[in-house]
Length: 261
Length: 261
Image (cartoon, rainbow over all chains, first blue to last red; front, side):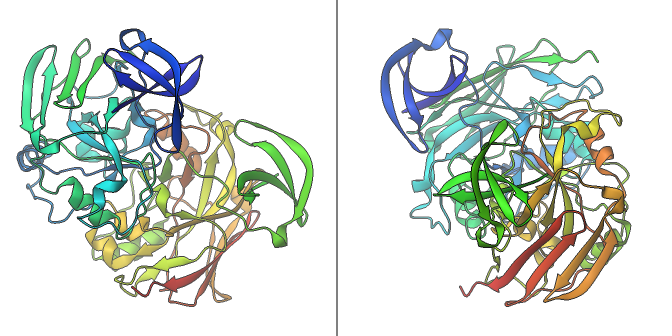
């Protein structure tokens, strides 16, 4: 199933994507739902981020080549994370498919995409094991962890570097039947493919994070875990279109604009 | 006004504290409310954390003496923050007045309180100025930023050190008429006063954070900003009662227990 979120008469509505149409439900995939008779064309519907999380977790550095690239970019020694130690991003930064990534007027020109797999939690969970850890996962979506590299050197907490408004586009929907091992993550800038990597080629897997996190932390419905990215990013400029595809999920496409003041 | 939050027949309810009674409202202080005729005795009501935030911001190191103490405790050079750079805590860690602080079985004995003033955002805000920045603040409450110092040395993101379930008690209520300059923050462990400092003696003020944050970040109703703590903390052990008072707001009191496995 593919779960999308959108506004109907100004009200948050979840729907199931079936072919090129969305079937509205009452309720939601987290607390229970019922199908309605209403459907609408996907092409004419403005999608929102498919979930507004309770806690926005982020793995950070979790692919080997990216660890080396980012260390070079911010002038530090590369260090592969030894354990699945989770980090955080902020809710204000989240936006939806098609929403503009707005570069602040005082940002440098080092504004870069990071294509990430996102696990969406569907059920409350603590003390998960490798055998049962995926029972709490509703499905997967795509995130773009937009990063301002000059601020990334200065911000210990990454608050401007990665949590400026609009720096966390997420979507287009939640795929509940996702095969991580078969998937590839691709980035296209203005249609030109720049990045293509095996989605599951992580230092620490989704299961590693779920098991380690829930020794100390209760996961709740709507929590999201962004799994990190691979490779070296290019800069994005005003007028660019950034598209992230994870095969088996879909494509998250966002225009880039620079604020004038 | 003092806003409290509690359950009535299993439903989240906000109420106004008047003397020793709570007056229930319909709605909430963020989206509008109406008083009902129902009141109930404060002494017989289990309070919840007075707000469940959208984004949980934390100033981190923001009092000079504490910067030196914590640097010594984790073995790093003290460095007073040059700018009001905000950080984050996680929603899962939040608990209410009276709820136990649960020390995980594998934690060290270095479990310490940190008494913090908390600003609660009432209205959406961006690009605040020093003249208008408090217009978006509904009021203030108290937070206990419980910290496991051995994990604080290891966790780059502080995920276990400060975001383990139950490590962020908040309450007892939101005071809308708070005089920061007159206030003192006090900590009592089992009734013995250990810490007493002027609440407003911050490196960067609440206004500094509001103005700097909102250059890049939109604040939303229910967001909270924890303002950091002063001084050197002692360890808490199973059976302790930790009480934080900020004069003009009230007292946040939590028992401490250690999990057995």
